[in-house]
Image (cartoon, rainbow, N blue to C red; front, side, top):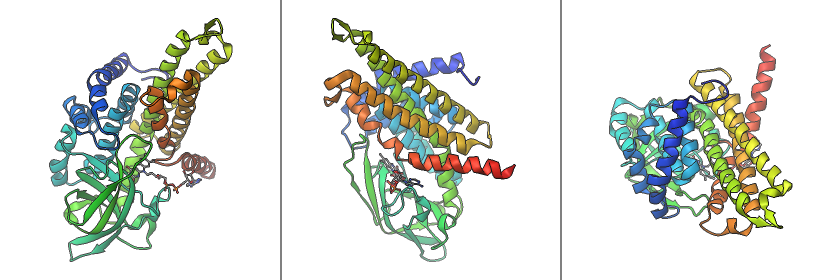
Length: 375
Ligand SMILES: Cc1cc2nc3c(=O)[nH]c(=O)nc-3n(C[C@H](O)[C@H](O)[C@H](O)COP(=O)(O)OP(=O)(O)OC[C@H]3O[C@@H](n4cnc5c(N)ncnc54)[C@H](O)[C@@H]3O)c2cc1C
């Protein structure tokens, strides 16, 4: 890949994914119940071989999958991303036994995964998490506390749970556990959010875990969380770019045909210039996402800065583009079931999760000053 264009094979693959999303995944998504995991959709993602690619692809391939699916079916895009987010810690840090038990089922879509980091008292400041893991015999712990805003909860089959094994040690006292949903003492409830996918809280009431459930090493779980988020951060940007492109395509089509003032909306310069602006910003965000993902795949040392920039620019851009698309469509965009009404609800959360925009700016500034100090 050059800095400016994808290979023809990558472009062909993206086109194929958009077609699959429109023809095979969209009809299943439409049958799903809002706020519930759509198991038929997850199974189809598995049958199409897309879930197994989560564990064999690099960051750029992950971005291309997320962008392409998001253009035609955000529900499929989110279901794919959440399988990756929940199960990547098992893939990258799990024991052979954990991997053998769970990864084939996550890949064929028969087991649904979730990533449980956030708590009522620890969101952006994830290292402040307090869900307690208290020693229970030489080989075990009991988990007590709460997780909230967990995508796929409480419907998921396995949770990557980050718990405090050493009180007062901040990020260095956190352990990642693989917790199957049927463990005694684990319950959950649904949250009713404007984001269309399943979200819930999890309650841990002395849930037993052993050394066999640890992902990575005890007290080294924050690294597991950050490794996962570093891989997924540019791909949140790719999701946003896919949504922006869908909103732009709809706006070009609409403004080209809508009658207004004796011509078409596109004939009004104020409208045409807004469409041009949407296009420029979407393309800039796309290039930054590809550059960040490529840097990740090449093991470059400026990945934190690039990933933060890509996520920040792409999610803020998508918000602008979707909002402008709503404006240029007028009232029809606000009807329930309209593509833009759906995107308007989808586009808001990525500016908050996996590091809010302000947190990304903090990372970018920190990296810039670090470079200065290293001179
Ligand atoms: C749709 C959705 C899905 C989610 N899915 C998951 C999931 O699957 N797993 C999971 O663990 N969590 C998930 N989350 C939770 C998400 O990660 C948190 O919402 C996020 O980390 C922010 O935490 P908070 O909401 O507690 O906000 P706070 O941490 O309370 O922050 C609120 C606001 O304060 C500002 N702020 C915070 N920190 C800084 C800073 N350092 N500098 C400047 N300003 C700052 C920002 O404007 C921020 O939005 C999800 C959230 C949403 C909305």
